[in-house]
Amino acid sequence: MLVSTRGLGRTYHTIRGPIVAVDGVDLEIEPGEFVVICGRSGSGKSTLLGMIGGLCRPSAGLVSIGGTDLHALSPKGLADFRARRLGFLFQFAGLLPNLRAIDNVALPALLGAVEQPDAYERARDLLGQVGLAERWDAYPGELSGGQQRRVAVARALINRPALLLADEPTNDLDEQAEWEVLSLLQDLHRSHATTLVVVTHDQALAARADRVVTLRSGRIVSAPRPAHVLAEVASRNAAVAVADSAPAGPDGPFEAGPDALAAVVPTPPGAGFVRFLLGFLGWVAVAAGALYACDTLSARFQGQAIERRVTERKKAEELAMQQLRADIHDVVYQPDGGYEVTIYLENFAPDKPFYVLGPELRAFVQVDRGWQPIPIRRADPDNDNDRVQDVRGGRRLVPFTLRIDIDRYDELIAGYFHLRLTSVMVVSESAEPTDDLFERTDDYYVYLKPQRLSDDDIRARNQWKPGAIVPRWIPMPAH
Ligand SMILES: Nc1ncnc2c1ncn2[C@@H]1O[C@H](COP(=O)(O)OP(=O)(O)OP(=O)(O)O)[C@@H](O)[C@H]1O
Ligand SMILES: [Mg+2]
Image 1 (cartoon, rainbow, N blue to C red):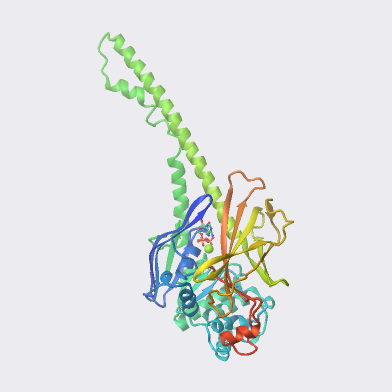
Image 2: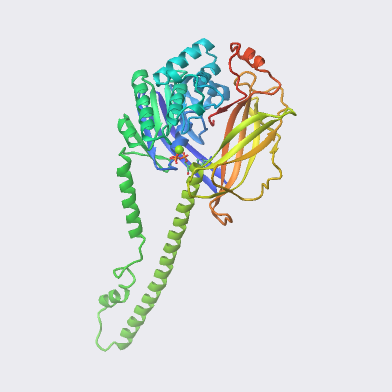
């Protein structure tokens, strides 16, 4: 068994209450297996993959990889484990724009302390395997989307991972590029016997997998079936649910009241009073029935209305999680010794406005395995932070400045700060939101080179060769 999860769960705590993203997942994956995880948007796929890859912490349960209890490791132990044993591919290539293709591929090996010539030899070899031998010195901006993705595949494999985790690796590619990347993944799986876990909506890829695991509302749906069968069942279920909650018809329990009552009581001759009483009781039963029916129907109606709103809000939340991208744009040095971190917000929903309050950013540096808060403030104080802003068309950049006057800190890469930035914003679909707002929290992790250390200091501390590239900041996947 390479991967084993037990009762794995994660709950996000938001101002609207808890969201259970993954709920008690037991999953076992054999070495060399090719598993596809599918499910509707918001079903918990990325969260599950993130926990298997040690990128985010479970709220419940265990993940073991090759017998190592992942989340029991220290932060440094976990970072090392991830770097040495795991490879990641994300929805977006995530290459560093100021490094050439070959540097991007070699970087994880260099960070894992592989000697520079070895790292570059491996990188060259992998670029050959992904069909980009000739383009080794191209910068990401000079490569097509599919080519960038292939560089990302090469980068994910540089440390020869036992397990490659991919989250919708062909998300925004055209068909040709998608086919190339998928074929490449499958070839690599065959030739390197790498265990592959891929989150995808792609049916063609699912058909090529050894096993398809389907998630619904954070749980594994036991019988693995193709997604279109599940979709049909879901739409049939929805139709049945509507039929179930329809108002009671003429055969309903209440209208039968008086007749039923009359039928069971024999009519004694001349018993006018008894007939009157029975008639009266019958009408009381009808009235009570009608009242009860009204009550029940209005409760049902309200129930349906609430359910509809909850579903709509959930949809809006999912859209805002998926279509409103927020990430670090850049980190630059400031003349006064501080740092400027710019967050970008970009709305990928073509016609949907998002109104955002914030973001607010908090910053922490890892010290003695804990997170020490550091002062941070909006760099554009004129920009009214209390105003709800429409995010549409292009990127909105939000700059922050921070100071880090800490001498002793945890160094996962020698010399670098391990920085955590937590952004909190309130998102709504309407400009004057009433109850359709919700809070979105994102954590970003970066390694940041302190201003006071020169490139040579960093190279010396990490035993990197002279001339090796020393990035100012290195974005890390969430963890
Ligand atoms: N940082 C967060 N804060 C609050 N809620 C979150 C956060 N990340 C995810 N969620 C919620 O958790 C649930 C599962 O999200 P997840 O991203 O795992 O879904 P997914 O299956 O990968 O969806 P998709 O196919 O759209 O990528 C969703 O309801 C989502 O809104
Ligand atoms: Mg996802």
